[in-house]
Picture 1: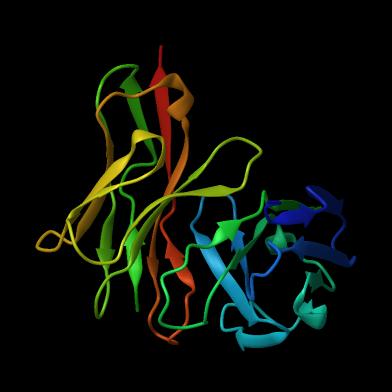
Picture 2 (picture 1 turned 30 degrees about the vertical axis):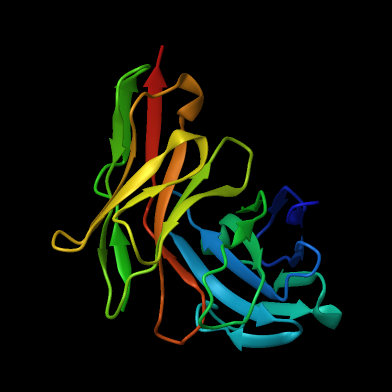
Length: 117
Length: 115
C-alpha cells in the first residue's frame, strides 16, 4: 500500500511569489490534514479535510494560505504571496475513520521543505 | 487548550544502554497520547499511542512508553538503544477542543545513539 506522498520535496521561492504544495493521501482515507514545522519549533496544525469539506481550518495563519481538496482525493496548499516567515516544512497526513471519536493514527508524508528568500 | 512539552532538545545515549525521551502533557479531559519518529528525509512515522488501559504501551521497533497520570507524563523508553534509533522524536496529544482529531505536537527531541 502506497503511503502519503507530497510534491515537491523542496521548493525555494522568492518573497512575493506563489507556491503550490500537493499531497496525495493513502487511498481510502477520508481525513486529510496539513501541518507545518517552522525551524526548531513544534509541528503545528493548519487544517483538516473530511473528504472534500474543510472541517477545521483554525490553524491557517492568514488569508495568504488556501487549501483545497478536489473530489476528496488529493489536496493542494497554495501560499500567495509567500513571505519569509512561511519558510518551514509542510507535512500532510491522512487517516481512516470518522472525524471525531475515533482513535485512528495519522499517517504522515515526507513533507515539503519550503524556503522563502 | 491541550499541550505537550518535550524538555530536552537532544538526548545522547550509548548503543546498548537504555534510553528515555521525556514528554509531559496538559489536557482537559482524557489524554490521547502519541509518539512519532522522523528519520532523515522521511516523514513522521507512528510509534505508539495511549488511549486507555495499561499504563505501559508497547510500540514499533522495540519502543514502549509509560503513561503516568499523576505526573502527567508519557515518556518514551527502550531497554537497549541502537545506532539506527538516532532520529527526531515527537510527542503529541489529540486536541479535543473542536471534537476532531488534530494533533498538538511538542518541539521534538533529537536522539543520538553513539556506537
